[in-house]
Amino acid sequence: MSKRNVLKAKLDIIFKKLFTENIQLLIDLLSSLLEIPIESIKNVKVKNSEILPDSIEGKFVKMDINMEVDGKLINIEMQYGKDYNYKERTLFYWSKLYSGELKSGEGFEDLKQSICINIVNFPIFDCKEYHSHFTVMEKNRYEVLTDKCAIHFFELGKISKNANKHNKKELWLQLINAETEEEFEMLKQTAVAPIQEAVYIIYQMSEDEKIQEAARMREKALHIEATNMQGARQEGLQAGRQEGLQAGRQEGLQAGRQEGIREQSFGIARKLISVDMPFEQIAEMTGLTLEEVSDLTVQEKKTS
Image (tube, rainbow, N blue to C red; front, side, top):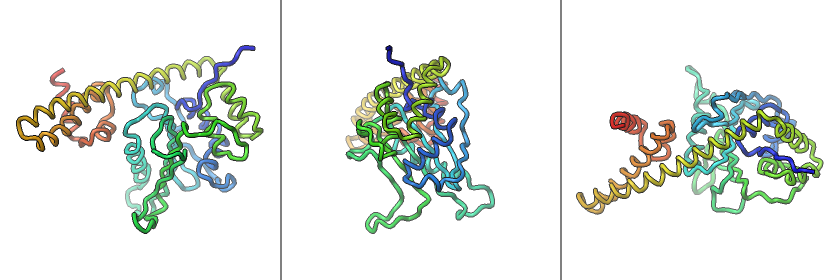
């Protein structure tokens, strides 16, 4: 009997399709990851469930799941490829999530608890724990400033390969991380109903030629994006070093170091502009202002 080619739930387009089209599974996932009773989740409203055809091959498309859950704002993002500035990026997106819903005339007390859940397919923290939970607190007293900020990271590479039917959080992460039919079958054997249902749905999607093609196109787009970003980063670093050394000879070592850092940022930015990365992400990655990125884009267009 031939083995089936199973789609990976950690591919962002499959992740989004699985959980936005099966709300009860999404509720179970939220309950498990945030460690809250499933019966306490009364109302889930997904705000961006659509997957547009042009987003499958689009550059730097964010396949997140943005929702309101019992008055809280929650965003789940499955990050498949490595992102060198992911910590800064998620803080930026959390700030937009937190402030974006405040309407004109409303007071700051109306701001809602905002939670970012990041499931990442690469190492991000130097620790053995797969779950890192961040909030805002006083450095010495560990006093929490507010409960309205919560950012969670789940690192798939740190998940155990042994399925434990009594730990549903790990089971969900193992399912998201699974790549082979053997791994999915192992999860089915736990007899945990939501996990079994998710495996069945993934098997169904894996038999659909249209979904298979969409997954193939999405994985290709992510690979091209990662290759372009890595190449731009390396070329930008090299250009920055060269320009920094030249500035150092002219203005002195200390000034050259500072100028080198700036030129390195501009070098990276030029390469990222060439692959059409959005201004906001270029500013996040380089430390430049949006105005500097905009001006640099105009310059690049004039010289191209």
